[in-house]
Image (cartoon, rainbow, N blue to C red; front, top):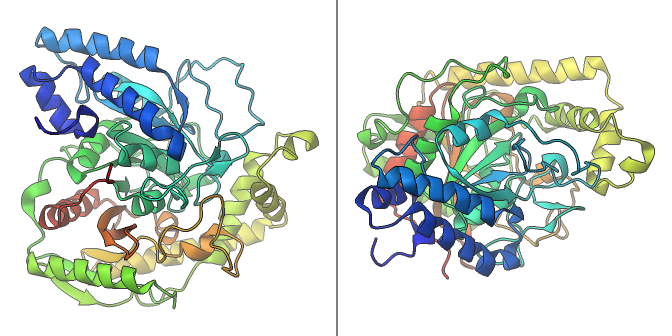
Length: 467
């Protein structure tokens, strides 16, 4: 740790340094704020930074540590909050020019409330596309968020700001949302770890207009941090009627149990016929081989009886988008991201029967994946089948499709089924861009997903963005 800059330390390393007196929360927070000053102009990860408030929280934490009385599991750890989550005394603008910042902001979302209870230091809010509607991060309000490995490329989305911040040491922990891949896509593109936990594992409020597709999840540089943050975020909140019972054990416990004896399936395209970039296919195949070397039983197979549910996902997603803007005037709608405006119009064309049919497709998909996991404990796929492309675009140049879902077919199905799915780095392209491996488990198997991710991480250590 002596050779590592404070802004590059993980949350467990920071907590250990606080306990030993080697580093204080104030020093760590100052280092993170300085890193933001240095690095954020190139990537635009933050839409709000409140250094004064962060240092105030850090000084209070420093006093608790000096007394030997830290409170909570994240006392003094700098953390960012995606600008989708309500945060007391900070505006939550969701990347939109239609939201008035000059109103009372007097509530915390459940995730933010749990972080506050555990005395995390709130550094600021991270960028999101407008209302978190797409798999890249740019908005009319906050502009384009760029990839920390190559600022000409996209960071992914919709939690792109959160991923870029973590990758560059602009706070070791972040919270994001995921309705169709929104923590996993940017984790893959930015070379970090993220988990979309089983639906309901992380309480969510206000209820998302995208319904039960929408998850909240932890983002960090290591699996151990992700598990620690999930422990914190899994605390109960009565405002979420669909939240699960709090876990009875820590997700950190058992991370080191390994994967020996697990039955793991590998599928490069889920049988959808998706074209996977050859370097990504190679990296995922090599990752599968690593699991085999670690003692798992690995078989290349596609989940049977499923097809790409994109049409039904669009019904659910576009209807939700239309719901999210139903209160706007005609003048306000003209301020929206043009792509968002377009899918909202399309969302209004669907009937109740269309929505129910999409829900039925979703249930069948969930049943078939449930049956698949009777044979296989885990499923491995690429997180995203293509490398990061030009920033400021919804799809790659010359792609032939106009919506982000056309290049993310391996993420949104597992929002429909509500299964836990993590993205962890598993290699680089020839251009030096990160490649993400997606690890999917059956519903409620979050601990198994994290355990497998940790085993892979230990076998194949990852390097951060070169600085």
